[in-house]
Length: 115
Image: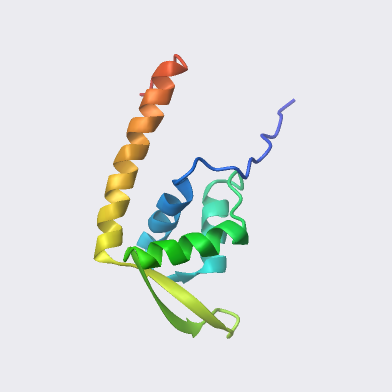
């Protein structure tokens, strides 16, 4: 009998920013699509709440890591699209490197080895 892992919507602080930046490497997207891609790519283990997503998008835009523009969604509705800036790409590389270091360090503490 297989047990389904219960999704936990609590993400490590700062992880959502990195996941948003990573999602936008694929191209511009509006908030609903960003959340869907993160959830789908994580096999629905990660749940992105709108109450976390939109403040994160605004924060990333304020920092210059995202730019936004208005366009039409796939439903032909007006939507704000976000795209990665050059500074955002640089930040993603830094955050991904830090994330790998954290995963390796936690793995060592837990007695697990990677690779």
